[in-house]
Image (cartoon, rainbow, N blue to C red; front, top):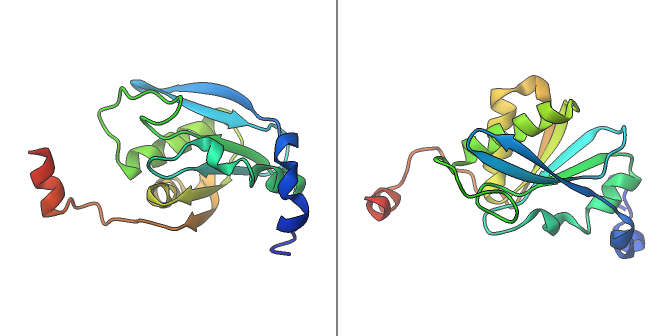
Length: 156
């Protein structure tokens, strides 16, 4: 039992968790997201680099059973989200998360960010603290925003 959620008893419930895939136009691209609907507090789950929103398929029903509305999104260039962007930074994805929260009119939200997207969750909380109730960082990879010498060399 963790925070009122029994993980062992409910792991088989993943197929009972229906979510509708939708799309949100943000600037020059389109964000794909799944929304379970409902009137509970919003949890926005963002996967890390190389992962898809479906990575949260086992967690979604547990959060729903706890009374949350669960939205999962694909980050820029992943899954069904378009790859036509000028900026793929953690900060840009944090702004996408805020745009989605605003579009859903469901804030403040708990933003769950995995790996690279943990930085996006932090940027969203920094940029719009009134829209972010809390952040949950899973295996966070958070950078200071300054590209390393290797990154500078790789793109030059």
